Image (cartoon, helix red, strand yellow):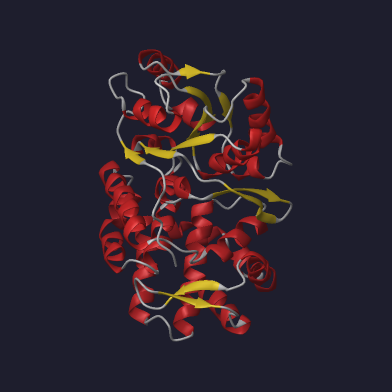
Length: 359
């Protein structure tokens, strides 16, 4: 487990591209040290297509606030497929940045979810030794977790996040209204990112998640607002760790990246929670609370069409071996709500029993 002190500013706002809202403009000025920041915009196609008048608003915003767009926006379809396309999407961003003569005093502004942050971030690290990066997350999972990642990773063949480079943003600006553009599965699956964060670090946050899970499932905007702010506060106070991630990564790869990240993460949380219960680390009543959160929020819905993946125990557990290549100290499992425990060499038979419980 680790605390995340965050070496960069995080701003919360509404209507981020509203002409009278100077939050983003001020952030860009601080990041660049210039009164007229030079910016390259990389945006998720889904967000652009489903946010009415977004292009017009952005054009008016940069003109009003003295921001220079270095090039036409680079618009890329979201989803995991852009991380496993033989670098095509990342090199598209690299090429656009080079053509626009983006340098170390300029900013790559990325509007999208976690996969776009990976693709654009990977590109930003390559261009001239690294350019400044500002993230505006548009999915619940990205607002809770992905926007704060300290790396950018691409997939290779059947290995998710195989090509990973350090990538720390210069700033994060959060406008939760962008989440209105996402599908129900992306919305509900995003709750798993909060559960993953809370269960092994922050008992009070767990209690809050139990309370708000039902209204989150119904896409109550005020619930998302509360959740995202609470997740940020928990990250600052308690940090975050990798609970449930090894299985989520492997499940996504096994599904040829058709299983949404949030749903995969919910399954990963369940697998490691069942394992922890069997090992005597996690009480039955705490396990039931974890299950209830995931069910009430809708994050567990991915389990219903992922049985065939969970049944492939040997293939799934190959993910443990892959995980240890980059995490030799093992996996994190819950040892009570709000507490985590490192398990260096998880018992494979016990983990298979956990998979049977998920099935």
